[in-house]
Amino acid sequence: MSVSKRRAGSVWLRFFMVGGLTALIHYCFLFVGVSQFGLSSTVASSFGFLVAVIFNYLMHYGWTFAGGVDFQPPPHGHALFRYLIMILCGFIINAIIMFLSVQVLGWNYLLAQAIAYAAVLVWNFILANRWVFSN
Image 1 (cartoon, rainbow, N blue to C red):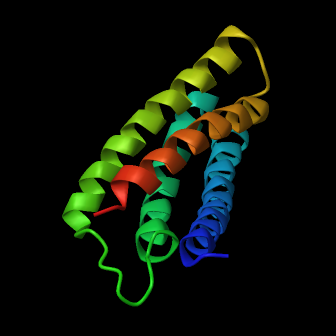
Image 2 (cartoon, rainbow, N blue to C red):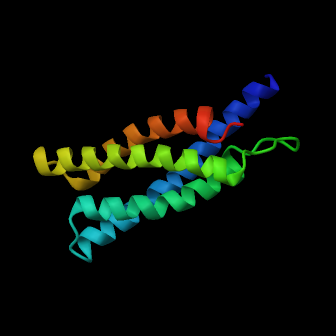
Image 3 (tube, rainbow, N blue to C red):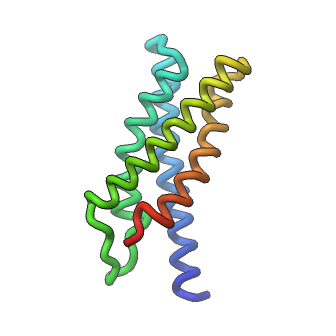
């Protein structure tokens, strides 16, 4: 297996590990916000999204997309600006899916969040890998 294929495989694996932890953080805020604080699912999901995004950026910048010894990551200002654009779009995708799924279609908020995750996951991986964390 070539070095680039090995690196691509490890990036993919790290992306999903960080994504899984990010999703867990997000779901915890969503569940607690709805069940303990009586927030709407859209508000609780939005708040959880913002908290999880901080964790996500730091992990992706420092671990997921960090290359080998010779890799020079893009400067934080550069990467963070692109990351915030990516996240803003993901935030909008998440909120729209949550609103349509829960308020319009009447689906369970946890199921709706899983669907929103799938959509945002694809969006984030493509942009993070090809634009946000590349030089």
